[in-house]
Image 1 (cartoon, one colour):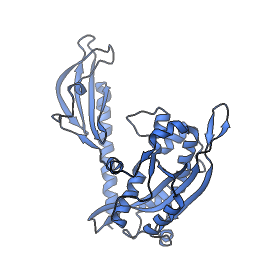
Image 2 (image 1 turned 120 degrees about the vertical axis):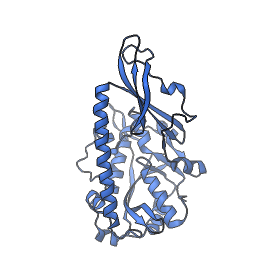
Image 3 (image 1 turned 135 degrees about the vertical axis):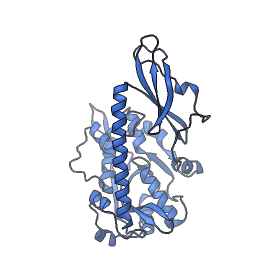
Image 4 (image 1 turned 45 degrees about the vertical axis):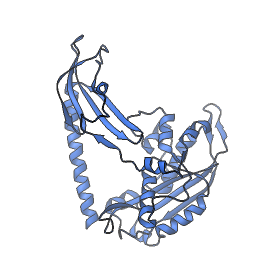
Length: 319
C-alpha cells in the first residue's frame, strides 16, 4: 500500500457564475511514500517511510485572473509564475495518473474540501474519481499525541511538539507543507494505529460527512441539548453548583454565574454546542469571574480585528 500526502494552495476569488467567492486552487504539492518500515532509532523506535516520488505543479487561474496581495505575500507565488501553469483539469489528469491507487492524505480536511469545490466548479461533480481511500492526517497525529480534543492542532504545532526542525521549510508552499506533514507522520507512524483512520472515499456517506458544515447551536430549546449539559460541578469540591441568574449568549456560547452551596465557591460556567455530522459536541469550561471579564474583552478585540481583516480582504479581491 502506498500513501500520497497532498497539500494545496488556493486563492480566494469572486466567481460571476457562482455570484460569490470560491477558493481557486493555484498549486499542488504531493509526496508518495510506501509502507515499508525501517527502524531508524532503536531507543525511540521511530520508523521511516520511503519516499517514492514527488508531484509539484502550479495551476493557471481561470476564475480569478490575479491572486490577492495576501496570498502573494503568504506563498511568494507571483502572477507571472501562474501564467505559465497548467489549467486545473490538466493538473488533475496528471495527478490522477501519478497517484495511482495510493491512499490520499491531507493535513486536516480544508485541502480535500478545496479539491471537491474546484472539481464541482470545473467538472460539474464534487466526486473525485481517483479518490478511493482517504486519511485525515491531522486527526491521526492529534490522537497519537493525545492532543486536546477541543482544539485543532496546526501542522507547525505538531512539528514543534515532535521536535522537527522547520528551518528548511517554506511554509504555505504546497510541496514544503506536504513534506512537513510527512515528517510528522514519520515520527508517529504505526501501521496498526493508522488503519482505523483510513476511510472509504467511494461512498455517498464519505462526501456527506466531509462536506457537512458544523453548526453552532444558539437555541437552548433545541431538543438535542440535554439538561445535564447545562449542569456544572464545583471545581473546588466537586459537588453540583447552583446557577444564579439567567443564561446569557455571548460569542456563540452560553454563560451563567454559579455558586457552590457547600464551599461557597463562585464561578462562571460556559457551554457551547456544536452540531457535527456524527452528532452534538458539548464544550464546557469553568472560569473565575475576573478572568471571564478579561477573556470577554479579548474575544471582542479579536472578533473586531477579524472583521477588519475580512473586510480588507474582500475589498482587495473586488478591486
